[in-house]
Each structure stands twice: as structure tokens, then as C-alpha cells.
Image (cartoon, rainbow, N blue to C red):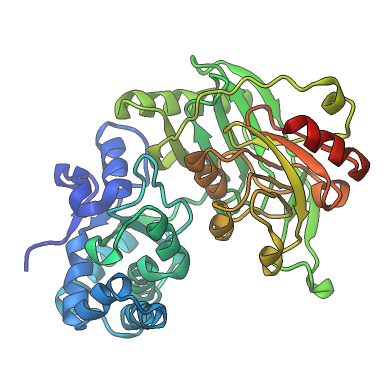
Amino acid sequence: MESLIIPITDPVAKDAGRFGPKGANLATLTQAGLPTPGGFCVDAAAYRYQIRALGLEESARGAFSTDSSPQARRYALNMKLGLMDKPIAPEIEVQLLAAWRHLAATSGTPIVVRSSALVEDRYGSSFAGQFESFLDLDNETDFLIAVRSCWAALWMTRALRYMATHDIDPAETAMGLIIQPLVKARAAGGALSQTAGGDMLINATPGLGAAIAQGEVTPDRYVLDRNAVLKETVAAPTQYHALSCAHRPALAPRMRKAPDPCLTPVQAVELGQLVRRIEDLMGMAVEIEWAMDDAGFRMLQSRPLHLEPEHEYVADDVWLRQPHLRGQPAGAGWTSGLACVINCECELSRVAPGAILVTKMAGPALSQILPRVSGVVAELGGSTSHLASLARERGIPMVLGAHDATQRIPEGSMVSVDGVSGMVRWMPADLNSLTMMRMT
């Protein structure tokens, strides 16, 4: 069998049709001399080979081709269970283990397995947070489970919903993989090479960056101009680590005082220069994920950045007199609507079409609600979280890191959300009817 696992330094690895845009983009950065963790790209042909070896072609075709929704769900479940529970074809497993053993021997660190689907990291369909990554793998058994789990993630419910909104048939695509050494990060986060206001933005948090991506913390925020000159540093006053359900008093969110900013001014400028280099290399505005270990910065991901034109909005006197919160903008537009305040995902059925969702943690699982809402306000998260990326794709105004929003914004109040400035304002219920009349 031909080799389906290619070093990221091999020019072949830049083929997005074989290794997915995520893997191909990372190979492009690596081969241009930008700092990355290195590693291997796994051809999507390995996924297809596994599908054939398990006899799952019929289930793959049936998941979207049948008119019966229960039958479609059974086909999708067959795909998930088959890929998760059945062993990897020996011809593929031997290549995977060779890559694992090489990285384990040469890096001396645990290993990471990341999805690189052929449909993700494209302009307008980033699939941010819809697939899987597995960190800190230190044995072959866990490594092979992670590989199977990343393949199966193509058939997870949230990924299928996202594909349906983009008219993508999962049977017509495939899953590539990235296998890398773990970056022992002192700090990590994301960055936008451009914002609606024309600046550059960096988010950072201590340790691994998964908490930023999942919207579980309010990160530090660094604003730089287009020449990577630092303009503003906003250290998160408090780092929150939230759980998914607020209806369990024994599992209440934990809170701790944040340390000093994660990056020094010199480091922020250095990272800004790297981001600008990536933008120039890719020939477009980009959104990146990064980590910093004792050796310096490592670029983990680069994808096209969906930018909406800045919408000029000037609040009238009525709005300017109302209470407000400021947070981190996702970077898209302005809107207003009635607040629906929820504390966890189990309350999402209460969210009415056109509402402003006010919640604690805006994780990628909330992507299912984005088509229904006019805007989102969240107590946690930052401008580079996965849900912020999905909101930018849809042009939905969103403000994250708006502390105490669920306590201060009343249910049913009229709320305005400025996704460019990061300002949220709300009106008492007795002013709602007046405001609604003025808006019609």
C-alpha cells in the first residue's frame, strides 16, 4: 500500500484535497519557515479505506439520501459506532503506529491527534469546533482510539447539522488527520489578522488554548495596528471556568483571580508580526490558533477569516441613557431584540426566533441556535472562540466576556448588541413597547 501518512514538511502535504485545508495550511506555514509543532498529515484516503474495510458505504450514502428521518439517524449512528468500535484496518494501523513511534521517540512529549476534514477551514464554512482534537496522548491504545474518534466526528450530530446548513453530504467528503507533538504551552490562544475596525487582535490565556476555543474563559485581549504596533492591552480581570449546566448547585462554576497579562508587550508584538506574515503568505485575512512554550511561539492553525463590512451605528439618546456592559466583540454588525436569558444548554428550547440569547458560556455546541437568534451575549469567551467564528460566518452580532450579563440583563428586556464595538445596552420592560414602536 502507498504511504498515506506524510511528514508535514513534504510538499505533497500542501494538497488540501488529500489532507484537508487545516493540514494543508499548516504544511504551508511549516514549509514557509513559520514556527509550528511539525508532525504528520494523514491522507483522507485512509478514512475512505477504513469505511470500505468496515463495509459502511451503504450507511454513509443513506444518512442523507433517505426521506425517513429515523432511518437517516440510524445510518449516522451506524457510521459513528462502526468507526469508533471496530479496529483499524491493519494496512492503515501499521502506518499510523510508525508515525506515532517516530514522534514519541523524537519529541519526548505526548502526542496530539486533530481533525482535518476536507470541508473545514474554508471561507464561509470553517466548521470551527464541530469536529474533534485529542491532546496529551501518551500510549498507543489511546492514540488509536483518538484516530477512530476523529474519523467518527464527521458523523456527530452537531457536525451533521452544520453540514446540512451548507448543503454538504457527509458521504461525499472525508476526514484527514494531523498528528503532532504536544506543545507544552505556557500560554495559548487565537488571533485575527484583521478586525472590522481595521486593527489586529490577539487573545491569550494561561496554559493550553482549548478553554478559549470552547468559550470557557474570558481571555486577555491585545489590540495592534496593521503594522503590529501594540495599541491596547486588556488583561482579563477574572478567569472563570464554567460547567455546562447551572442546575447543579454542587457543581457551581469556579472563579479565580487572573494573573498578570499572559504576554509581555514585546511578545504581543512578536506574535502580531507572525500573524501578519501568515496573512501575507495566505493572501487573505486569517484567523489563527497559537501556543507559546519555553522555546517561543508555535502556530497551530490558520484558516480564512470571514469579515463583514463595518456597519456604522450611532445610538440615539434613549439608548445612551440605558445601562450597559462592554465585552469582546465577535466582529459583525449591530442588532436589537428581546432578551432570552438562559444558564445552560438544557434551556435552549426557550429561545424564540429573533431573540437575543444571553447566556453564561458560548461554546461551539450552541451553533445549533445561531440560525434562530438575532444576537448573542455571553459572560465568558473572547473574539477568537469557535462560536465567535461561526457567528462571523452568519453575520450575527455577538459580544463575549460581558461579565454578569445573565444577572444584570432582565429576561424579556429590549437589548442592543454591537458586535463591532463590544457594547451591550438594555432597556427596562416599561420602555420596550415605546422602543418597538420606534423601530417599526
